Length: 166
Image (tube, rainbow, N blue to C red; front, top):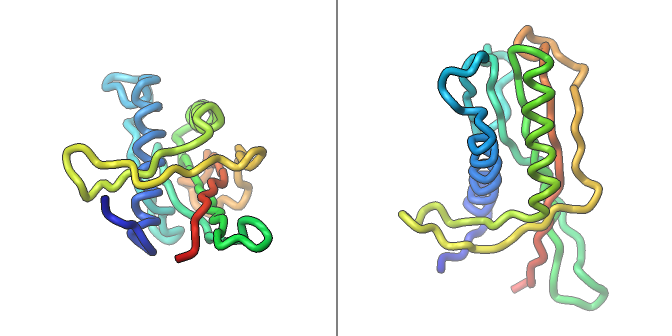
């Protein structure tokens, strides 16, 4: 099993969460051809505010990680990683519905297996992150400055990982 560190570790965390959430949205029928709404686009970064973003884009991104000591006298630390799922929808109702499904899935899931996607076809589980109780928020940001942000909805949550310092 490979050891994930630094930027690679972040990429695998984001990809694992993205795949789990997109898998759930797919199971709910959101990516089915022939629906009344425009097809969804999924990206693994927050879009540049200066570029036009296609409506019905779902953007996954990580916030700034922070650490704290696990226990007094312990050699371990706890990593806190904020994760954002932004939906730039064609209508307010569609955005509200999709982020509602994302919120429900994350809350029910409670944890995510982080896989090493460099290993194909069966990526191994490298570690597990836990949802921080009470950390999940569902918001409709009010700082929309572009037309594609008119029906912008966000789900934000924090996951933790306990690690031993080497």
